[in-house]
Amino acid sequence: MLIIGIILFGMLVGAAAQLILGRGSKGIDWTMAFVAGIVGSFVGGLLASLIAGDGLELRPSGIIGSIVGAVIVTAIWRWSAARRKVG
Image 1: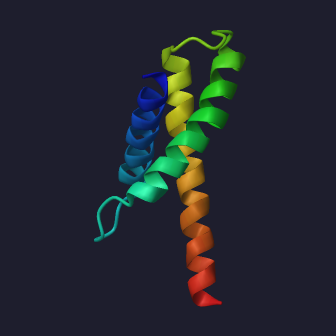
Image 2 (image 1 turned 180 degrees about the vertical axis):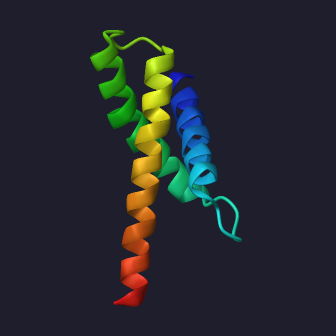
């Protein structure tokens, strides 16, 4: 059950990152949402929680860090995809 919760949370965070950056006309790319959410949550959420001194518990600092991490991962993904199309 924990794994399903982590996957759903990651997808929601990844979708939120796409909404923050703007979706364009295509809608939400769920593959990108999943990857960006999981990676962003792990990196951003873990770092924010540890810096804030919350440990590994679910706290607002970890949620905010997860969203920031997912936004960064989504921006890098889009930048990389744009470079591949041009070159």
